[in-house]
Image 1 (cartoon, one colour):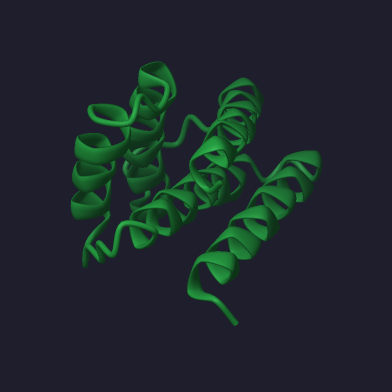
Image 2 (spheres, rainbow, N blue to C red; image 1 turned 45 degrees about the vertical axis):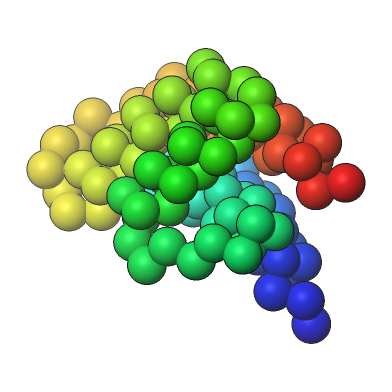
Length: 123
């Protein structure tokens, strides 16, 4: 299977799982999977340019450099991607415990918009 398609399919699976967790009041993990759906989409986009960063920060850096600065990916969605990464790191490592319903819902909405925005770059 094509690596780009596999990443996109996994991103879709993650956002669907994020929604299931949200509906079951598991907000911390819901936020984590919303982030990973965006992360996988960013990786898939970079693969279309034959760029393979090894870290999350490297992926975000290259994604911003190429798709935001050069190809006009929505800047506000890109900023939200970075914000969500920061929240995900705190959620994964237990540094904060305020994973409210509102934050989780917002991150799911952002992830859906991020995925939708990415569609024009895969054509």
